[in-house]
Image (tube, rainbow, N blue to C red):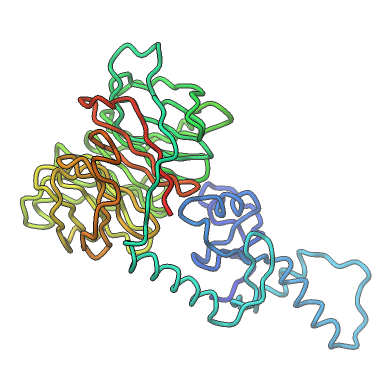
Length: 394
């Protein structure tokens, strides 16, 4: 990891918001300096929950005590922490030996952290056949107050709750992990997509040409009064920790936004790939490579492309619709055969995770999240519309 200087010892997420907050940790994987609240969010986020944080102050004090013990110079009885940090961080190089995980310091060899992560990632990505799904519950997302038939266009696990997008009733519905209904929030426009941003925050998109941010607080959903403009109606969205990837099904295009909502790139499918693939209604973006995975409903398959829009592979899959990631492996919905398929990030269609006998209906959207739970929603024209089936994946 790079040497840290005093000028860098500020929380980077807060600094991006215009606030200068002193950092308490540094993430070993993404190198970001974080204050205490941002550190807690970082370790609870789905994307970064397995990252390792370096506790800057403890490392500074430890190093300072070593330096003091090796010199005969008298020391002051009161030590200013900021001065120690200032002197020390001018020259400190952070290494694996200072890694802390969830606040508990661990002694590691120089390559042990990387090797363990590589081994864990390899085992998940190279052996998707080991994954098994067992049903643990099922609950209805209908409310007596619903004026129209429930039409679920997205489901999300966030902050120990489940958020459901009901497009036709123009509501966001909040449930706990046991399927107990908590509350709803009315929407001004039809909403088609939903994605997790961090611990309790999520984003939605739809017919208003806008990406909205929301937060789950207690048993309610609260608008963050923050929105990002996109050029056209949006039918799918995914945030990978760095970029928002917004799908425009009608225009067969994708908009890439940075974490502040600034447009980075617009991918026009016809111009980028020179192919006739037509996008479906869901999208997923890899957190490591930024590769984009799009179910192509009309072309019967899943397309993988780079963030620049270059097509990498296309895997046939009848009437591909929803898509999520389960422990390093893609999980895509096959609407025609009423099943869920496991696909590697290299494009190999491995096998069915759940088939029609397991599901009992026509699946549409899927979301893998907290506690290894896979949430499955069903088509509005299916007998199981308005239901969510929850499977425990091991």
